[in-house]
Amino acid sequence: MSAVRTRFCPSPTGMVHVGLMRTALFNWAHARHAGGSFVFRIEDTDAARDSEESYRHLLDCLRWLGLEWDEGPEVGGPHGPYRQSERHDIYREVAAKLVAGGHAYESFSTNDEVEARRLAAGQDPKLGYDNADRFLTDAQRAAFRAEGREPVLRLRMPDEDLVWTDLVRGEVRFAAGSVPDFVLVRGNGAPLYPFVNPVDDALMEITDVLRGEDLLPSTPRQLALYAALTDIGVAQDTPRFGHLPYVTGEGNKKLSKRDPQSNLDVYRERGFLPEGFANYLALLGWSIAEDRDIFSMAEMVEAFDVTRVSANPARFDLKKAEAINATHLRALPVDEFIERVTPYLTAAGLVSEPPTAEQRRVLEAIAPMAQERMIVLSEAVGLLRFLFVDEVEIEPAAAEKQLSGPEAAEVLDAATAALAQLPDWSTAAIEEALKSALVEGLGRKPRQAFGPVRVAVSGRTVSPPLYESIELLGRDRTLARLAAARAVTDGGSGPSAG
Image (cartoon, rainbow, N blue to C red; front, side):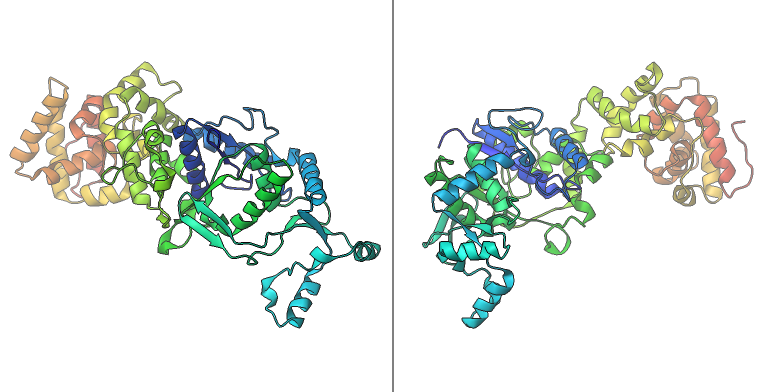
């Protein structure tokens, strides 16, 4: 085998499944680890289901995840074209060579005829095609054509066991005769996936095929076709196969396209970092070390060994994905965090694009504290909104929890009095003034003392650190918010900030 060449060859149909992107990631990492090439190919022969929009979306998702390809659409390469819809002449030529070489033959049997023959022989019709058309004479073929029948092309399967050493599962064996001769080309001349996929792999000199375990039953057909392609000079060799474990969802069932957790767009829109999500995808069947979950893509490439991929199903655990993403988010330098979070704040109408000097100042000050409280980038909108608006909208649940009753009114009145005349508007001075007024002055426990103030200034029960937030808000906005919160307490009309 020459240098490692892997491929990723999805169909452009609808949403992008996280299991599909895990397959792309493992192929990319395997190629990069070996210093080889990662080939991206589009299987777009299903005109009824394929769409240009889905094709563009696939390219965008790969690039978002950081999986740049060495050959393929928009990159080019020596083995193009890289879209199956542009390779029909190649498939016709290869099919003709397989027939000429005695590896493929015309088959005229209808499904009804196959079923009748199986029943007549006392066999289960579910066994499918019985290889009967292998033995048709020229006269029989001519007679079928005279009836107007259009033959399919089938591959003549070998009469011995088909065995391979799977990169993930070890030795896999299919007994001779267990896989019937299969269709390569339909009667209307349309080539089928079990034919075009290995032909493309052969012509693109793919050495390692990593794909989902749901495709494992089709591997004997690929091995037989590879032997035939090698015999007619189309293939150089048979690639190594590795069948990756299922990604499962709730109840350990395979994560289906109908499961909302399976759609990559959900994570992109929530603001997962690509490096955080790629880190989590890598853990669906592989680990860098027993006691380590967090790593960069460069570290994955260095350590990736496909023979260490588990054959067992990998469960998609949203909580773990979020925890890993939060760790990557906290590790971002402040400037990079601001750059990544700004589009979400801009879309919500909170900051301009680019942020003004004042908005930038606030972001730089709050970023390290916000990062500690966030899981995904979109959470910045709710968490930081209060810093970029004149009047804050208090969440009803937060108001009910912290602003009801005379005790809340008492706290807000004391906080207002402590802050109104504060000469030094700094985090340290604000902290000292509030602790003195609320904890010592009112004798409240910190949680009871600061909960109403937090909800008053941020509108929420969860916010960045309180004293720093108040400093950033400034005296006027802080006092106005304390007054507005005081107005919604149950304690009547006490003093306000005016």
